[in-house]
Length: 82
Ligand SMILES: [Zn+2]
Image 1 (spheres, helix red, strand yellow):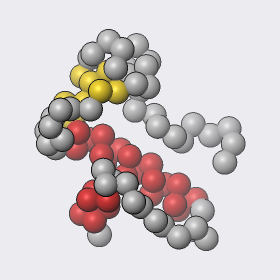
Image 2 (cartoon, rainbow, N blue to C red):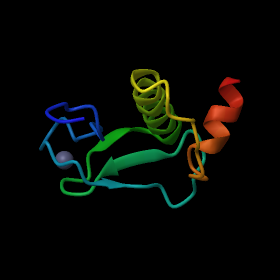
Image 3 (cartoon, rainbow, N blue to C red):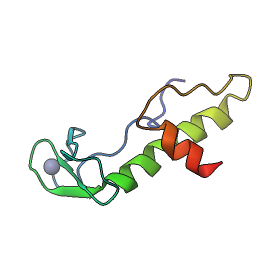
Image 4 (cartoon, protein in one colour):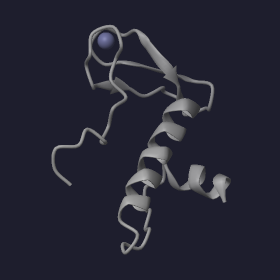
């Protein structure tokens, strides 16, 4: 797992900062914004599905590894996909 850029690529398109500000209320339609320039990056739902897809991609790359997810942010998204 070296040399890949497969991790945490939800960076701001305006300033390139990987820092994000989560919405105060984690509703699916709430806006996730940039931690540096405050521009809107997308919805909380979009962010969750992005993270979920990233994890699935990693899991498929390493099939011998059991899929364990204890992150309360991601678990509901995965449960919804099953
Ligand atoms: Zn920004």
